[in-house]
Length: 117
Image (cartoon, rainbow, N blue to C red; front, top):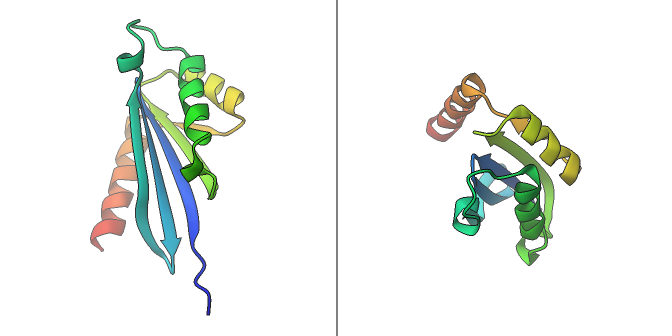
């Protein structure tokens, strides 16, 4: 019997930092298989980071071989404006969830519940 492994990816935009996490899911078990992060302030010395700068980094991440087997992507962002999140979504053709403080707390609580129960 063949075991089906599914790969899902999450991109988290946290102000100037972009975090990529890829998980494999086998029989309901999640395992982190790849992690990458990049802080745009390391690349750019300017104070303002544009939606184009962020979309460019995400596109570069999508061009790597380890992202080719991912069947579903989720992108969320905090520390940037809703307008910037909308511009990134438009440029990438993917929905970007803008995470406010209440939503962040909800996600943390759900994650803790799943992890500990």
